[in-house]
Length: 182
Image (cartoon, rainbow, N blue to C red):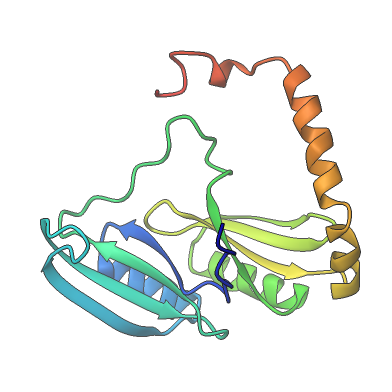
């Protein structure tokens, strides 16, 4: 078997948006991510399917992007019917907890409902939804890189323990057949 290719980092995370300008305002004006590229087409390059769209890219300081597709129909992506709203999200890193606090004040002043600041033992995070229903987390690491390197040494063992414990868990009603949207 061939070895995996070396993945160097995130290029972009893409999500559907209801309105490109509304999304631009949120990510550029409120979060400070500049709009740096727009692709406009009538056909999907990978499938050839007819679907007029714009694909907009906002750049983060590390050179990666968050991107959105506006399909021209004023429809946002639907949430997953079998997944709690807090599960699927994108976490964006900031430098310090003070910056998380600053972002919280800015978002609240703009009328954005936020949850946080939440202490996750290795990070402190702020949560909110963008205009498209995408849950966004702004997070600052609160432990050293050395701590994270030590934690990596036990991650496989912790996962193996979870697999065993998970098999013994009672099924949650949300996961029972017919109630998860499947």
